[in-house]
Amino acid sequence: MQLVISSVFLLAAVGKFLEGESFRAVLRLSEFPEWLVRLLVFFVPLGELGVAFGIFLSSSYILSIFFALAVCSLLLFTGWMFFIIKKGINIRCGCFGNASAKVGKGSVFRNLCLLCFALLGLILTFQYKSLLPKFCLELVMVSVSLYLYSPTPFLHRCTSGTDTLF
Image 1: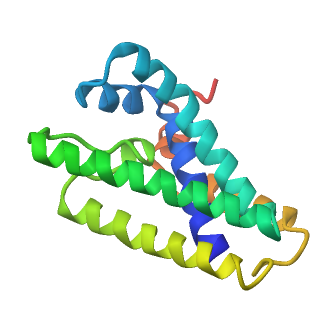
Image 2: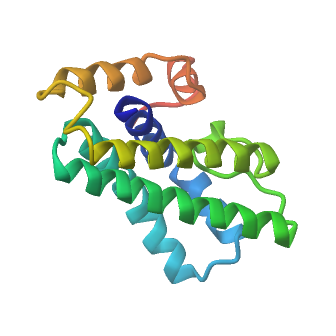
């Protein structure tokens, strides 16, 4: 449970950090005011990163706080998806950078499944301290390494010589 939710939040944060302009464009198309777009572009990836590492590294009652933050984030994001669908705006969600799918029934269903999973994690934190071993730094390093070495479009671009990391 912890591994799945924290991995999703970690991948979402990394995707937004790597493809920040894509995320910014999605927010602008959502008709948010520019001041809010600037705040969200900065704080959403940081918050997702904090939730990811908090769920990975926490135990006891602090873990329930991070799961509650994950549930709140997923509720807000699902609400945003319903808003986008209702307004008829045709955009990609920007969740995982350019790899994101178009906002539609499938993305809402995926988000609702993640929300249920996070809620289950929150409920379980009141019964168990943590499902992961006490020290999870190795788990964090392995997860980040697996993501960085996976065949993502960003890494393919960087290794093909058409773009650079810096």
